[in-house]
Image 1 (cartoon, rainbow, N blue to C red):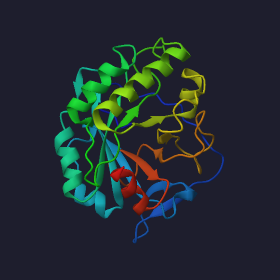
Image 2 (image 1 turned 45 degrees about the vertical axis):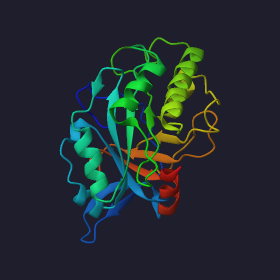
Image 3 (image 1 turned 30 degrees about the horizontal axis):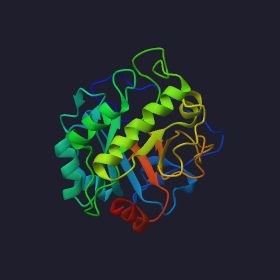
Image 4 (image 1 turned 90 degrees about the horizontal axis):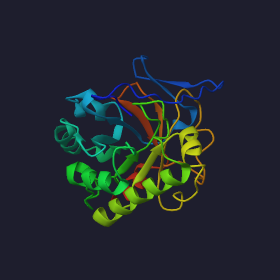
Length: 249
């Protein structure tokens, strides 16, 4: 995800041999390396406090149709720019959602979910609010990439997070992860694919590649960490009508 006050996130980047297609402005200036399958799919991005004050009208003019904003991390940190970023996107006519960066060795899934919902992760049936999202990936703070949890323990942590978000908001969270982390740290668990949308992170590739255990398709794909839009670059796997339908629940 987009950087904030924490150290730069370490992600397993999978480099594909296939060429990527450069997205160009009308004047011919490259905006971002877009995957070949991006044609017709709504573009979006995700931001955190690292982006500070975002020019949302400019983002919309460059094609942003949705954004995920970092709300919280663990059970102690809240993005100080969250409200202005989240509300600013809505004012500009961009669908918005909130995400939580999981730190499973600090507190339970239920504790972090409750903190997230209280500090920006609530969902509203207003047609503009995307489901809450859980960002779960390699531990940026220690060598214990799976936060010291067993595969079964990690599955249980994610389940308790999801159950609390569902109890408080009525929606299951979108799960952001990489295929490598998921398969390594959950044992390729298939417990979530049926009722959790997948937000896949895979950079520098012409396609989304192999998916984490259980999922047969991705809903969001984070394909780059820089480009035309502030923060990380994302696609929605469908139409704008489908994106709005997801927001409505």
